[in-house]
Structure formats: structure tokens, C-alpha cells
Length: 473
Image (tube, one colour):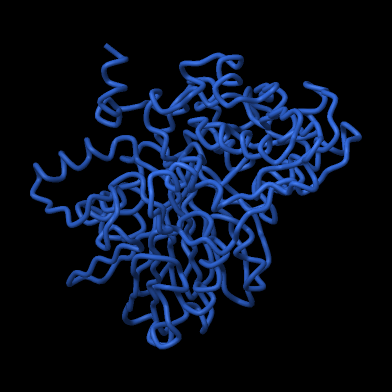
């Protein structure tokens, strides 16, 4: 489904490279491949081993960087970031990587995720005299590193990381080294690769493909990688780990050509569609998917159900992040500017529409109406994940039960709201089995909190939206 319309968005994507003379240029291309993870800001910080240079701005990667700006980012090390605003809000000052300079050297930070104890740590730091320059929770780590009593930068980083709670994939760079850390639950994806004699890390492996890097492995929960001119070392900042990768990475967020822990996203989504067909066989004439993230599941459903897959919906790829809305009528029908039904495919047909999730239900209702206006005799909606009933506090912009249609409505009630002839959601067990992680733990290494309400970490009261606080009393 279209993230901008649906209201389900990931916070950002990170990339780091060390040991390549075209580090900034490669980071630019990598960030373009990660653009789907954030479109509101982008930045690159580069190091030549002696000094650090940076450039960042609001907008898409191609809007933020010119060739002249990239030419000024010299060196064999770089970190990059694309941002989608959730925690901390927008604004130039919150665009990452964040860069901090001091008499003892510089420190650049790029972060994917959300710290559930960020507010508590901010209050503690301010009481101790820190002056925070941004509203981003990423800045907290820089202050904790600086205030640590250890002499060695690596030990200061390890000590600071033990104070953080929540989801985080950090890429940290000084003038002389690149450090990479993943939270003890491994909630966010992070992979390690190699290019020539250098090393790269990225939120998704599709970034490796675009620059010609070779995938090595996933970064482990609780692991700290130190990469410098001498090579790469792996250490632990905690052994208390419990792998809980965000399941929506497989279902929705990641690009189809990416792999997470050795599982290809497109293949996993096809299996989700096939499992959906096994759980909910239904008669229909055509199967169609909502572009782009649902197409793989729709193909899987069509194959399993032996019903033709057709391109019943077309995405307009030339609509920008924002568009002029000259009237209230057009504003309410904005989805029509993003998606168009193919009348020749759906007219007079029983359409099985496969989508990855329903958050608020508004867009689903509009798409169902569009298909029926285009002549579909029936529209059966199949969702390749369970109902999202609970908010996410780990970097996805659903923070209250109130905004989630499934938290207060039954499946039948949602069906009536969106106007579908039938509505089916994949079971939790079916989803986990179809994704196929080899993990032997209870949830096979998944975070299922948005479906089950069982969070892998403690949720701090000051993390909750005011509406959620009222529910807990």
C-alpha cells in the first residue's frame, strides 16, 4: 500500500562505509536505494582519517545533494541517513547524521529506530548540565558517550549503549573509525557487507547491490562492530539478547530485493500470499495487489488459488511527496491521484484484492470504492498480515490504539466500513510460518507486538501518548 496514504511508515535508513576512496559517492547511491525508508531528510558525513566534513538537508536524496556537494565530502569513510519523521519531529536540526565536534575529536551518529527511555534519559542529562540541540532521541547517545568515564572511545560507546532501551541500529563514526551497534532485541534490520578491501553496513541489503558490495552476514543483537584501517573487529556490549526482528520489515517495509537474515523479502511475501490462499480460499475471477509492497503476496495468492493475477491497480509514479489540493473534494479523493484502477481488467469481474495491512481503513475504503466504480462486481480484500491492534513504540508512526481501526472494530465491522464483499486477515501463526525464519524460539525471532500486544521490551510511561496513558489507568 502507499505509505503516504496509509499512515504506516518506517523511521529511516542508515548506511556506513569504511575503506573506500569514493566513500561519499557510494553512500549517495546507497541512500537512493534506501529512499523508501524515509523521504523527509538525508545527510552524509565523510572522514579522510584526519577531519570530518558533512552535508545534509530536508527532502529527497537527489534534492539534498549536488555533484559539487558530493565532491567536497572527501575521504575513505562515510555514514549516511534517510529520515522519516516520527520521534522528535521534523526540522533541519533533526536531519541525520548528527555531527558533534569537540576538542577531543568529532562524532557522527546515524540511527534507525526509537528509544523507549529517551525522555527519561533526556531529563537525566539535562539535570546533569547537558544542553540538547535537537528533539531527536538520537542525540541522547552522543551525550552519554561524552559523559562516560572511560578513556577509550570504544569503551565509552559500549557503556553508553547499555543505558539505552528500545529499537536501535546505530552507525557511529569518528575521524579514525566506524562503529556499528544493534539493540539487544535486533528489532531493526542491519547487515554487514564488503566492497574491495573496505566494509559496508546498511539497513537493507539492496544498498549493497547498487554499489557492488558483497553481503557477509547480519549484525547480531547486542553486537558492536569496530571498523578502521586495520580491519574489522566484533565485540559485545551485552549478552542479554532476545532476537525480535520487526515482522513488518518482511510484510511491508523492506524492498523486495532485500534479504533479512538470509530470507529474501519477495519470496517471503509470496509465501504469505500462498498461506493466505490456504487459510481463506475464495472464488474470484482475478487477483490484484495494491502497489507496490503487496504485489508479491498477490502473486503468491494467485499461484496458490490458481486464479489469474492481473494488474488491476496502477500507481502514478510521478506524484511527488506532496501535491496541490485545490479543493476539499480533491483532498478527500487524493488517493485517486496515487492509484488508478484498470477498468479493462476489473470490469464485470469478481476481484480479489491483496494488501499487506490495514491501519486506519480510510485508504482501503477508497480503493474498494474505486474498483467498484470501475465495474468490479465483487471486491474481496485479503490482508497478508494479522489485524494491527496495538501501537508501535520502536520507530513506526502508530503511537495510539485510537488511530488503529482493528483495535476497536471486529473483522466484520472493518469489512462494513471499507465496503468490501469479504475481508480476511492472515493468522499470526500462518504469517510466522510463511516467513520461514529458522529461529527456534517461541516467536521464531519476530516482534509481534502490533498484532499481539506483547512487547519485547519494557515500555516507559513517558513514551506513551496521552491517550494511551489514560487507557493504562
